[in-house]
Image (tube, rainbow, N blue to C red; front, top):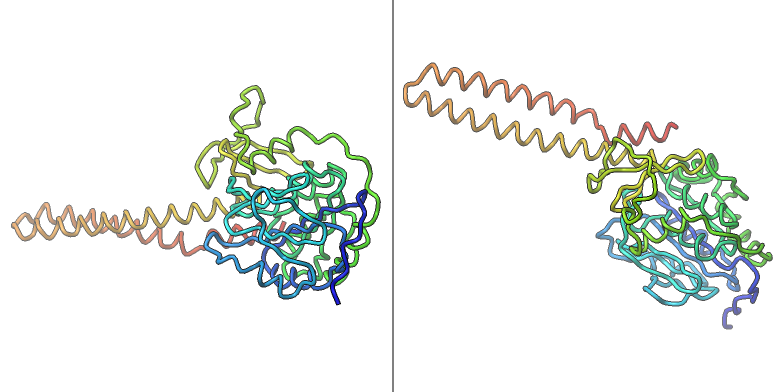
Length: 346
């Protein structure tokens, strides 16, 4: 028996965007397994993956869904009753009736990232959108869900007590006027109902949000408008080391650099700690190499009978060794893990 056709409701909320991170594969499989076969909406999914991910998520999710699950392709029209998955190392963005797949700047260190998907849907589809934040670490999805609400869409968050990793849902609840907080098992049925509800008229899209959506689509460069007065930060971008400007979304503080990379405060803390660790390892390598070279110089001085020079060089080599040991102790504190732990406690 063929599956039922998607219900027709041109005035409903026909664009559903879903974001997940850590623990997201099983959460998404569970959600898609329960979606109604006649869902009158297109579904767009971003799961944070590594750049070298083989791109098997479409197949993994398709095995559990009664709806067709497709890897998103640049420029293709989206259809109700279909599920579109972001390909590895590309942002998935939603247009009015089509999708974009672009290698825009990373957001919170990720590409694909949740916030560009949510933001693009809010800008292009306004009140047609339902945003869903599932399990994950830190606060990805919060800014994008806030954009959806600003444009008249609905916000659904997985109950933190039901999530494998509660930080993403908890952050969304803290900063966004969420419409529904539901356990994972109830979200699919809610989506089927809410998609049929009539949507309010579309309002004006805020200019700042429209510009950020264009940055992710590689259609706008942040430095092209020198008349805009940014709040400059003394912190530099951990991705490209460019200057950062602060963006205030209600109570949520974010940062974006002049090349387009974007970060929440928590994500910036983790990425900055990782950059610090890389810098420490670079300094440790240089210190060890310096010590080894001076040891060789001391040995050569001794071989040529220059005892005084050899002693001075040996003293210098020992000081380099002490410096290397200090760097090892700093690395041993686990700076990246500590920053993530601090962020999770807020």
